Image: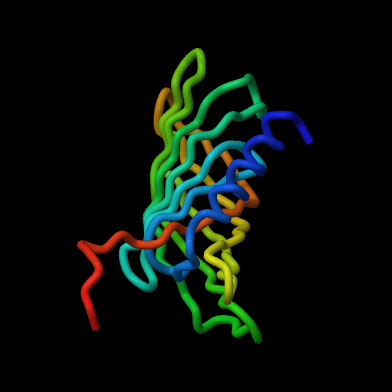
Length: 162
């Protein structure tokens, strides 16, 4: 494991120690995404089954480049049941921008699954994202990744006595 990856894993672990647990299907999650591309990932839940995710990542596929992407995701919990935690599948639609000599813009079609831990505010996910490139020309590209995110507790307007 490279020095940068070790530092990132350590930072996520130390952050996780400092925050109380929260549900993984609410709030904001930050973490890492490894694959094509590799970088940092964020997910913000909008409801119990919808979220937006984004990543800023480094790609080595053709020439070294930075890719930014964002997706709207719908989660389906009914397809598979697990004894502990939850394992929803998700589908999504989004966009990508890759900084190359000639920048690329694409429309992403995302399919994946994420495991939501029962007792820890973290998820792990695996996804594929066929991407229809629209600029500078049309082409089909593929991205795939494995990742993990830690979910931070939602901040409330203040604690009230119960």
